Length: 391
Image (cartoon, rainbow, N blue to C red; front, side, top):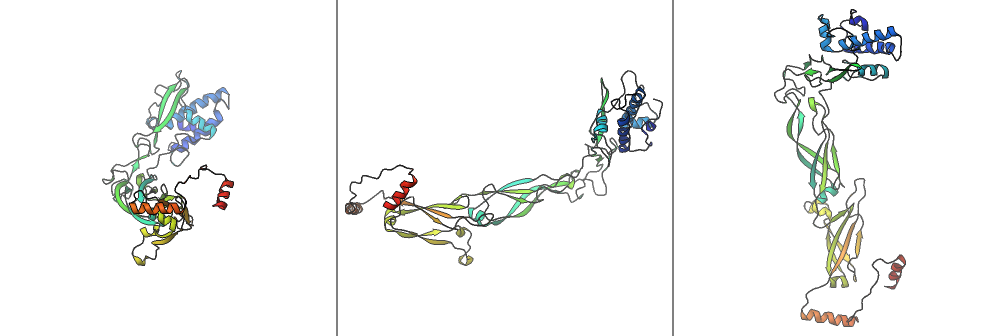
């Protein structure tokens, strides 16, 4: 090819990669055989494609600028014109391709500064803390910005420099011959790992990463009403990104410990109170603890630590008492209920006098030989209404 390659593409000798690529795309749309079947145009298209392959490859372009033969034996030679399949498709479909230069239409180098990953830690809280909220101090071991280089990765007084291998593009061309000619693909530059720049003098503290591991203390405010599995998000308190990039988020997952008295179902609390058979028959009053008692500090806390629950005479085992507003506060307001289930305890060991008294009571009530009341476990609505009026 005797004609100057820069003249074929219509660009100056100092044109950057982006300008060269744009010029090739413009000519390819005009000269491609699918658009212009004229034989002369086809020949020109082959020459333009060959010129672009040389000038878009930093090594071949450097060889050409020094006066060398970038084709290794001349253009043609039975192999057909070399071309970049990717760039021809870009020319027709407006893609970004793989080669573009800095500040233009290519992918370009991948950034050194990237957002950090999110982090997740799990903590256990007591039921009262989950119900009414609590502030906890957490010690987390995460990546933080390197103070020695301020996240840049280079030693103090130095800076990253453009990669000489890829000229700052972050990619290098690899050419493979096929029956179609030469197909050029772009791969990340091995010299700079696709960043387009190298750090000649890395920071000694972070080894060029721009971040270091550090243990720090955070305070997390757990809102009232959380339950097991609830996650509290702490924005930008996760891992600092490579190159000192912005931090990800930290998620604190809550696990609520089992309580000694209360069992939680949603926002309701359930518990069981056992009373003797005589108390169930005669009635009594018992002192019930509250969930607030777990967080009350001294008598002046202002929190109700207990209340009196009356057990009416004749209470049956399994009877439930629903106390409104004594459960767990909801995340969006309101408060659940406390459901107290009564369990009547039948004595298992009686002395002679106790047994005598019970037999006298049974005789007075006509219960020496009770037949029992056998009924289905699941009664109909009408059956329950009938029982309500007859008992």
